[in-house]
Length: 169
Image 1: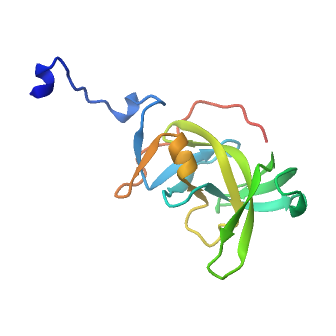
Image 2: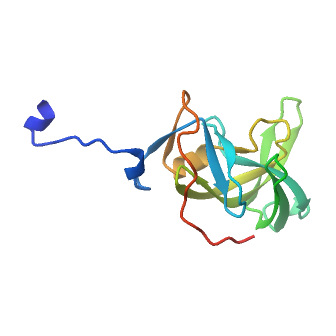
Image 3: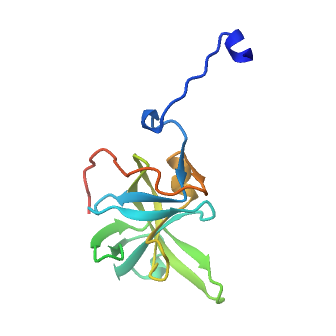
């Protein structure tokens, strides 16, 4: 071949050999873990969503007048009885345009998720996802940071087997 004649060779690598610096292709639904939540969950990987979103019940928050300051206390709900409580500083508030006309304001915090054997820490908006099939939606922010591409024809291609991390509730 032209490549071998030029002194180049191609090597096939398996997904197991991928380092964190390489792009990995995953399915549109994958198992994931949130740091601080023991049980893994199925997450939808959505290239149409700018920011990752998790199902959260807000327990305590500062006045919205303070916008991007203060702490927020919330409970992550996985839909199967797991309800883990977190307290995080608010990074910012995001405005979501609703089909019903009124804008929705959601708080944004930083969280760490394990997807495809990679810990990814980035912004996550807190939303009521009771009416959705997936309690976690991984948006472009985490897909980009985790160097993940999505194959819409595949699901559940990896397990969230990340190295153990210290948990800060």
